[in-house]
Length: 374
Length: 92
Ligand SMILES: Cc1cc2nc3c(=O)[nH]c(=O)nc-3n(C[C@H](O)[C@H](O)[C@H](O)COP(=O)(O)OP(=O)(O)OC[C@H]3O[C@@H](n4cnc5c(N)ncnc54)[C@H](O)[C@@H]3O)c2cc1C
Ligand code: FES
Image 1 (cartoon, rainbow over the protein chains, first blue to last red):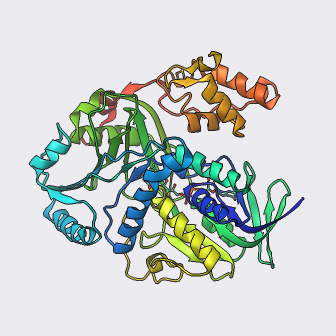
Image 2: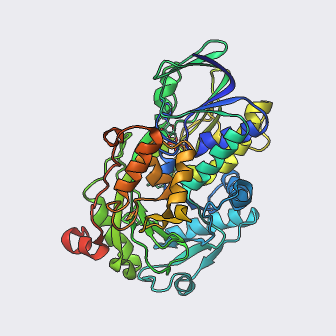
Image 3: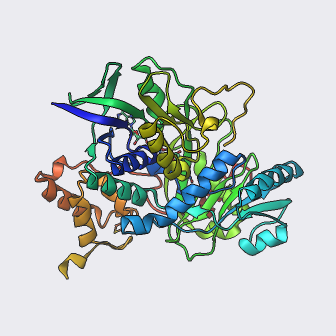
């Protein structure tokens, strides 16, 4: 069977579904192709954290916009996406970290983020029973929060269907052909023809780009998480411990505690196997900060991918192949950036120019002398 | 009324919610679990799993054997955080 579309979107994660929604609403004829089910990549494995505490104006502005979009979703979709603004509390256990926080807060305040530097005593009011040992200060934004990724995907899916977008699920893209229009071959033999292609396949993006001869500086790495049984709510914000043996965790509105840490060294590759050392490590790291967590029961442990770029910023825009757009390299923030990136990227694909500054995420930027920030 | 029967007691998921999910085009147990959280409770789906499986088989007009089980995630039974620290805590 042959199909014709304006834009073919490869990948049913937050980026593909969000951009698909905004394109379809503008009357663009889209096809969205997903190899498994929606959210089966990184989006369904993330813990749904949403924060504005970034270090550059572009990221902060986008995140302010994303929060605005998350807060309107319940009304737009007609059901809750479990958006909850419990805040983010970032901990500094060294003077060097305090200086980094201070510099970031200055930029964040310029962008009107409601953020402040707290003394350990003040941090203790935000998280009672917080272990204050070696704590120098904390950065706190009460407007940061979380949402449930699958509810957001469901909302976008319904919008895409309402605006006559086509979904090809459980069907893998084998190859993109650089013809005019593009030809996309699916696993089951379906042939899709499309004027433009948006490649947003998360960790698999570089692999698919290769089929059209495009090299992208993307490297997936494994990140793990655990979730506990429900406990009475005692933890409002996401707590982030930046020490080398630190971790980050929050408690969902439903009461489960979800915890992660960034492994050092990183674990490269597209993999979702869960390691032996993760659970005891994360258990120790979380209870070191909030001892009450020791009574929680761990229900599940899983792994997924961050897709990294050399400087830790996403890769978003038109590629050197005319008509082929890329959005990947979302690191640990693709879910939270998703709605805002989707909205601007849809505009860019339709109009051919950005309606806000995306140069920091440009595919053509130089990666020399840039260190990655997670 | 009958659609309000609880299918997943751990996560408060009713028959009506499962039917709505099946009507939206869901075709695997994994998706039911992810989108609804059915099967994600303390019993890890031991109670609701078989019912969900047969509901899905009926909806897809196929036999139970054709419905792939959901992926098992460690630990299979809830274990307290403190147990992990006592056994293998790296830095303790
Ligand atoms: C443990 C963990 C915790 C995280 N916590 C957070 C957090 O708190 N906040 C936050 O913002 N982010 C977090 N992240 C990061 C976040 O999950 C990602 O940045 C984000 O989900 C990326 O979305 P995406 O749409 O780019 O990619 P994905 O969600 O990976 O979507 C890509 C899709 O493409 C599909 N695909 C791949 N190849 C093909 C093919 N050949 N044909 C068709 N389809 C294909 C995949 O199946 C997949 O569904 C976390 C990640 C992990 C692993
Ligand atoms: S009844 Fe569904 S998880 Fe226990």
